[in-house]
Image (tube, rainbow, N blue to C red; front, side):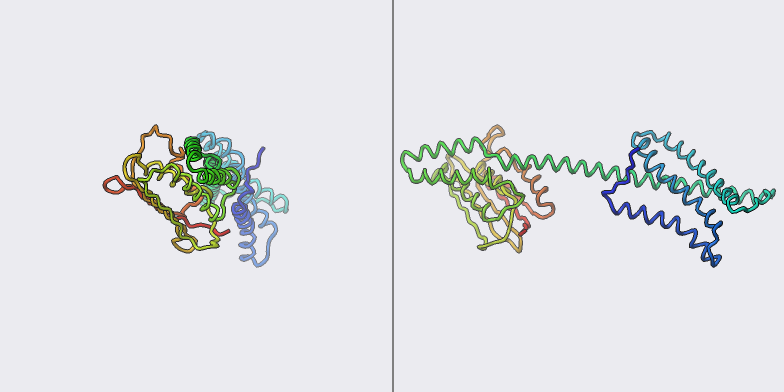
Length: 358
């Protein structure tokens, strides 16, 4: 038989300890208070009920609830508890009689008056109800633990799923973006070899960050900013003269802030995907700045030219996944406002996260 008193929860163990110390310690205290000295035979007799309650609790906690309630056999569970509580009434009566025998106390003749009988029955009914309440408490605690374990399991599964998504995000670079970048670099070689060489260096640093520097939960902010600079530099190769691109960083030097890697990249990709038209004037204005002690903000405003659903020029991550990632890494520690203006021609996103310096 598997004993399921969960040692992962010291709080629960303390509750068990407190309750049973109270149950077994109360009768001697009461007897000692009323009789000035502890009477061994009276203590022995009074121990019957705490022992019975302990048996009811742990028979339910260890066996009946896991075997019956968890398997939705509630009627059998109730029936067995009625039998168990009735059995505990016989047990306490037997315990009382055992005390008389052990301490050589002669049994009194059974009284014949009805008052004694009603008193006896009222005590038995009281004990039966008490045992039933103990069974209910055991079932409640056991089911609470079951629910807690199930909830932890669900959260752990969700955490693993999201962490898998994050790991994919850490290790991926959009093939479409990479192919376009390489084609642009190839075209640059013909008329601007120096610029093409610089683009290759930017691309190598970008790939190094994605593949090697990105396995930590948090990295120094300057490393992430350097990655974003390289990304913007690469994207500029593809831009036509009708695009107004501005990228400003207003962060104090030697800033101890640490951020989750790639936390802003999907916002950048979204701006470049939907903010540029091949024929119309376009703009992308990006600013990363310190908005308070330990607070980091990224403001992106761009012209809005929504693409079709079958357009794969973005990262494939999407803003919904960005939201999930923020909920995972910065739960309750970020504010994000985003949306289009009234004419649906300008899209603006402001993300503020409360970061760590550890």
